[in-house]
Image (cartoon, one colour):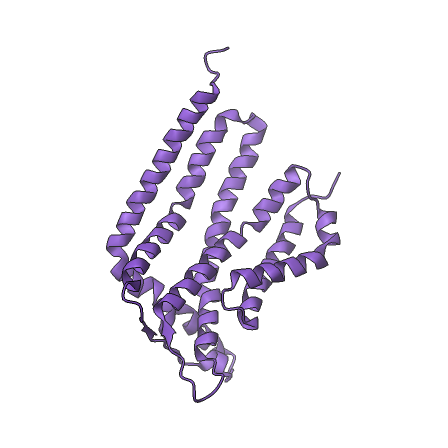
Length: 261
């Protein structure tokens, strides 16, 4: 055995160090977010509740520029949350700090994955894997930002103002708000990994352009089912808001890969 070859136990030891570094970075971020959470909660998490949220300003700007008077473009919007669970604020404080640390630690996680697998790759493979990890990181954050700035605000504004009867007053609980917020934003981030997953499968020869085109109708059904699982409310509006970007990602996947040789 050559000096630069590693045994199975050597690989496990390296993996152990990788896990410790990842957990260390995650823990530091989680503590930092926990300390800063009162500010972040008001300025970031609860921002879609207020009328001055950037996406609402954008809609009103579009309505003004195009002389559109529909309520979708002119609506003044504000949501007041209520809490009916004594322990909810504390546990939401912890869980929100945890998920924020997980999201922001993603680039470092991909970097550690790259460092771990890099020695085992051939020179011609390294460029492709490095590109895939970078693309995966970028697409994840694009999905998170789209979920935060557009998908969730649209969902919140529609559902919080929807009235089944004028005799029923909508009161949004803190738990309901956070559950929907985390679900939609994180799931949009994961959903944007679809082109990367498809590209990797195409490199392995599992899927190709003709295959994706042939089963486009089946994919639409699967996307609708996935969107129904992602959206905790189950209403048609939220389902559409999630399903349409997923379908566009599927079409992007077709454009990114080559046909079978």
